[in-house]
Image (tube, helix red, strand yellow):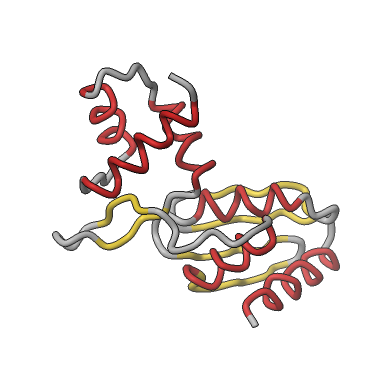
Length: 150
């Protein structure tokens, strides 16, 4: 099955089922007869920019972003606007705290923006660490990110 078809199945599943974990998504797809790995699903989740949304049972489940603005800068601005909890800077580092499930997508978007002053980003479930090339670069990036929130 091609990636586009697999991702369409993922869209269908997360809109019709309460999928909480990547493993659950893998299990559902396998039950549909698709051969997938957790690593493939992880890449799909990042590429599709799936987010965690509150579930009826009080937990979280995968969902589609509310809207997909055009361009990476628009996507990053929307993701920050929707999920940012805190943005802190220390020396050449930015620490971004977001709602659970949004860290990997925001880290990926910052990487895709290819800021010349960013060395790397690391994102987990609800945190993103941005390593800049210098303290001045971190100040500049903080200002750019804050400007996206206005």
